Image (cartoon, rainbow, N blue to C red; front, side, top):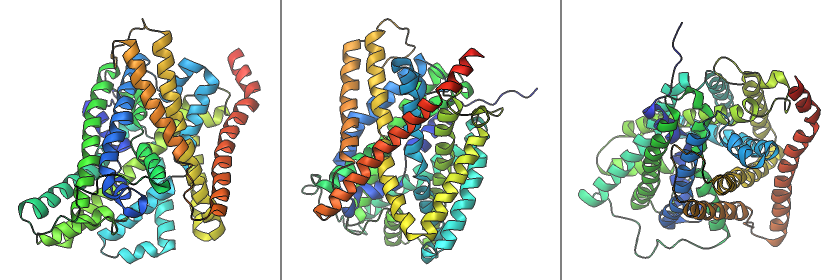
Length: 470
């Protein structure tokens, strides 16, 4: 009999980098239109300190103390019960479901760079066709489980880290060493972030970009020695990710004015500008575009697999039908994965063919950005409760041996996370009337997502009771 595939230390490091590092966030955070510009650099540092590092340490502790494929769902359930655990899993899934179209569009844009025809990204039929085909292929790959798809996630991590390191190296060479380009940013006067409504929304996006440490815990049964491997892998990945975001933001603002940086092509534009000044041809930029495209594909595989596995493969029997929750030999709920693929296909078709649907979709993305951070509020609250109520629990790894210190750190992270939820709903429209409509849609829609999850939990009660009796 073939030995079961396992995820080892470096596999898990690459999985974490794939889950948490998105090269596109560097361009989006430093673009003047986004709200921060050069001020994104200290904001990355702030978010890393108050959210990312505590998140990583806490997930490492929880994963080593409660090793289960349920991950975030299981930890919140351990502290607050099954209902709250289900709500965390539900919001985690809905928080990802509407982002796939953005991921896939970014993929297509990078592929048009590869072939040297950026104008193809304006062809909606091409974008639609490639996006739908790619999502179904990536969904199929995700059903094989991460133990078998780990080579894909490893390639994805390299596809995002190598272009970032290249951009940093090219910026340093062209601006600092060979001086073929001037430094366009004045770091003495521009590092102070803007404090306006756009910047408040941008803060929430930076927090969202740094979330995802819990993803590896959804595959504990496939991880080699999880109680030791998970904490070490999380620490290693956290150092890599924090460095890439901070130094990548410095590099892009050295060679590109923030007014010219766009969220979709900013990284490749910066690489192209620095490379051209050093006499390196466009072939090199196209090679970097291939890597970025691979990284996007790997991220989609991971974000298809993890939230679906948590929601449909780990929650209590009876919440959904047994057919939907049935898992294959790799522990993946295959029907749920393909059901999600149908749902995403419908969204892609609607936003491509019907202008009115595109407006609805943009609202849905904003709503899920708001609700997508709530599971992390629940995560930190669960950690605080578990540390406070169970001070003598055996913890193979502990963020702090002192309970009071651990609670203080988690409380700071909880406040930072809750602030991102509140600020994601900041009124960023140009007129008061538009702001009132936007706030009504955003907050009302967010409440609707939460209430829908609670409704599903309530109507599933007879099935859950029957499942307990069997």
